[in-house]
Image 1 (cartoon, rainbow, N blue to C red):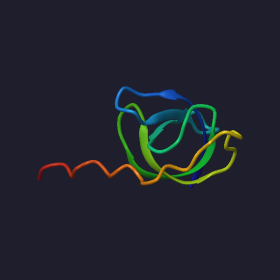
Image 2 (cartoon, rainbow, N blue to C red):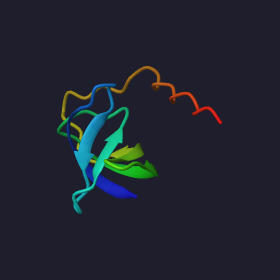
Image 3 (cartoon, one colour):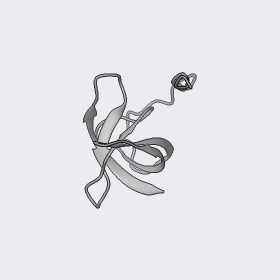
Length: 77
């Protein structure tokens, strides 16, 4: 698990942030400015991909979505 401060949105809607060590992480269901606990699920050449397990520092106007965004389709074999 890593704590990540998210800074901006990426082109596909995931938020991008950095770990304290400087590793760039992309994750869904979090917004720029939020600090979240993230479980890293994969690492690419330029960034890691994670799932938010807990938002640690939500803004006061954050609203929980009525349903979660579905996971991306599996890569073909």
